[in-house]
Amino acid sequence: MFLNIQPTSEVAVTKSSIATKAIFLICGLGISSWAIMVPFAKDRLSLNDGDLGLMLLLLAAGAVSMMPITGVLISRYGSRIIILISATVVAITLPLLLLMDTIVSMGLILFIFGSAIGTVDVAMNAHGVQVQNIIGKPIMSSLHGLFSVGGLLGSLGLGFLIKLGLSPVVATVAISAMLLLIVGTQYRSLLTAPCEKEISDKFHFEKKSDDKPRARLQWLKGSVIYLGLMAFAVFLSEGAMLDWSAVFLKENRGVNLAFAGIGYAAFSVAMATMRLLGDNIVARLNSKKVVVYGSLTAATGLFIAVLTPWLFSALFGFILLGIGAANIVPVFFSEAGRLKNVSSTAAIAAISTFGYSGQLAGPATLGFIAHHTSLPVALGFTGFLLFAVGVSYWFRRTTDN
Image (cartoon, rainbow, N blue to C red; front, top):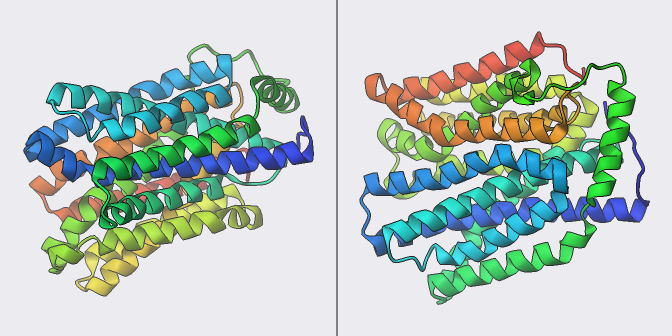
């Protein structure tokens, strides 16, 4: 269910939609550009793997710590100004990550960079939900699809600039300039705080007029915790592919190290493609079917990957995982914007925190399981969690059946 709210002109709504897509794109560009910079930072600071892991935890800590706070800031100031500030901080700190020459300064900048990424992530999802409520049809899947496209462009684009002969610092400054240009040109097209309040007030009036006053600790609502735990499981599968797919193909399927990344590439392309197509899929089916069928498809893909001995079947399984998991999280964010007795910004902040905790901390849990059993068993456990998401969502009453 969506509300066809019209607080602004059709032209303004179209501009807001385009601007929101641009913000999702630059967020993907920013985080993927850092991924390419990690080896340079490691060599410059002479870090071992353990030190690098602790350093990366600072980025995760910055992101997760800011997500709950961002919900409060959006409620007070609106998402537009939060997006502007946080996206600007992302762009400014990105080249600094290649200039810091001490572990302390690098850790500080990483924490700030992670905080900005976490902030813009919550703010852009909150803004996307508001635009979706205006338009009256699903758009969250395509927004997340553009985030995935930004991730692919960032990883390829920065490498391409370095291949052209630019130094890593100059190449990164070029990416940062692009981020600043995009956010600077699109900022004014984002919804203003009064407009967002108008949408929120009308939405609450039409859908929540008979509800009791909202509790102060909205994160403790059962509906929020449920969606958060489901997001944790789905994000965990993405983290598992990022951190463990190459290891799995190398050690369990005999793939040469130089080509071990093919598994994550197959997964990423499948996910990006399905997210770009996802809005039409959600509109033709419904949110419940997308989550249930998607979770079962994703689980089946992981089971195929770990239970069959062939490389081709493993890649096919990773593709199924990308296809199935692609549109689940966008549905969760959409549902968060329609929960009773809970503000959309608080719910989105909670789900983001749960989800990114799964993506960042979950793979470490899989490593513990793999250490005591095997990596196929750990990935199979991830498949079981996805299966549980599908089954539990099938029996759950949602706002969009």
